Image (tube, rainbow, N blue to C red; front, side, top):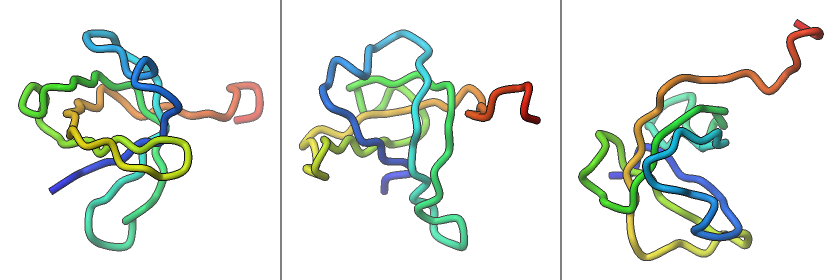
Length: 84
């Protein structure tokens, strides 16, 4: 079962072995299902490398046939600090 999904333009947007900033959708059951989170995360095309599963989708919602894995390092705010 997938924990998150992400919309990207190209697989090059998901480099392996680098901490990257992503907007992911939480697929956990409950009230927060489909809520977006902005996170710093590590991703891998190896579905078993990180603890959570990531469903990759392209611009129009097409599902990539290979599941990825993701490890969320931290949640980040997209609001600039001067407005907080």
